[in-house]
Length: 486
Figure 1 (spheres, rainbow, N blue to C red):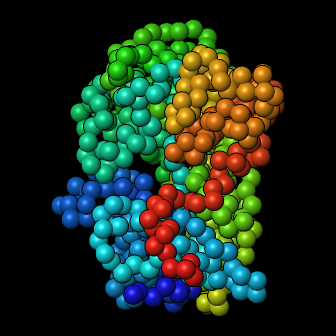
Figure 2: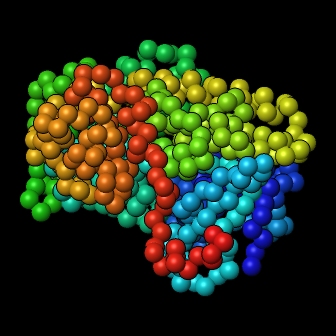
Figure 3: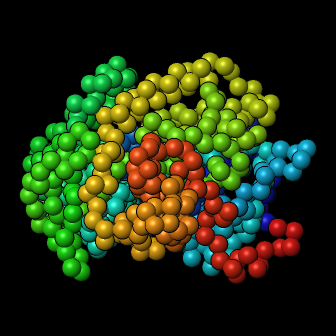
């Protein structure tokens, strides 16, 4: 049985987690890296099997050299026994430190059927004095009429198929929503051979003019924007601003979409045209995964993009003792920000355990993080979720796909049952009570509840979805087989 007690446990092997794990281990601390993926990289650096021919695995990726450097360091540190890497594992429960102690215990479950059947000797739980949480995030979705038809996918899911499996989700596509992430999805589809009929941006690039200094804080992003503009022109993909998909049509699958021009508040100004497609990629930014953060008792807050995020100090410490958070969970800001936060969290977690850590790299990372945070704030201001998106909905529009709850039922929960917040709507109409536990519909339901009351969205509207007793699915068989002392 491998060692199950460590100085530091890192959860997540994406940009933030990789950076945290190798940085902490290089200070001499013992580190365990727990990750649901088959191989390191997370969603951002998702790639085919590690045995793929050199060069092919990096297709469609940015900052690939940063990943390969971290991967090489991870392999070296794993070989030296300074990092224990546990892939295909998820944390299903976080046991907080007992009074007078500081050790967190993470209870693990298999993330893949193959892992469950492999019969390996991976421990059922690991214990560490320092806990660095880098859970990443997932696509934020808004319901629109027809979004539950086959052929409608999250933009991140479309890109994951391309990056991880070289698979096209459709042949004639439209990419819509808001934010810079629409661009790599559209150009990736086009480069793979799809006919991308348009990129529909609900906002406007003129929004960047609100904060030009922050927008210029990361010059590499401006270069990326030029690259994407060139690729769009090369593939003759129209970039339609203040335009959204407001209805999706089809019987058993997507056949066409309705494109509408929007005003600054997101109201439909006029319906422009109907376009035949077989793939709709929708992306409204990202929502952090906060189940692990709330499981530790750490505090959360609402960020500038209306996401619920972890509260951290200038050294990535959460408000729960011995807990550090890095990456999207502190606020969506991209891979470079996540890497910097991960490195800082790894250094501080090691320093808090009496490792020798010079102050110069800490200060340099803090300055870099501040610069990236300013850029992220400018990005969110330039590409907000349209304020009046709920006016696109019809009474029969599905809001919660798991429980088949319609927009009309959500409205009835308010009008007939007095539900004035997201928690009450969930209790009365059941959105968020299905398999995904609100991960898909939670943000939209919270926004709908606030909009119907004529008030701003609050952190309290968002917290019910983030808090889960079990942070990952676990079978009754696994629970029954757990030793009595667990």
